[in-house]
Length: 64
Ligand SMILES: [Zn+2]
Image 1 (cartoon, protein in one colour):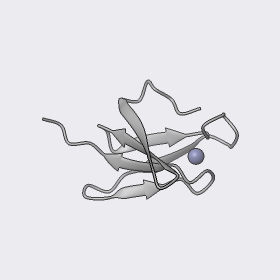
Image 2 (cartoon, helix red, strand yellow; image 1 turned 90 degrees about the vertical axis):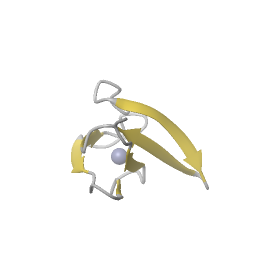
Image 3 (cartoon, helix red, strand yellow; image 1 turned 120 degrees about the vertical axis):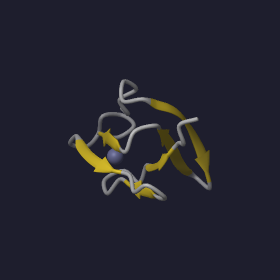
Image 4 (cartoon, protein in one colour; image 1 turned 120 degrees about the horizontal axis):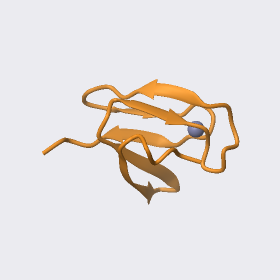
């Protein structure tokens, strides 16, 4: 599952894709049901990253 200790605020589903908002540029993913190896990604400052295993989409959430 997605680790909720890494400052992930919430997730939404758009067009069948799960979008994870993160306040940090470093995210980690092991699948929604812990179904792939743990991998780390860095979210570009003005962009997003898609998990190569499970297609979760991570986006940066602006800090207020
Ligand atoms: Zn994943």
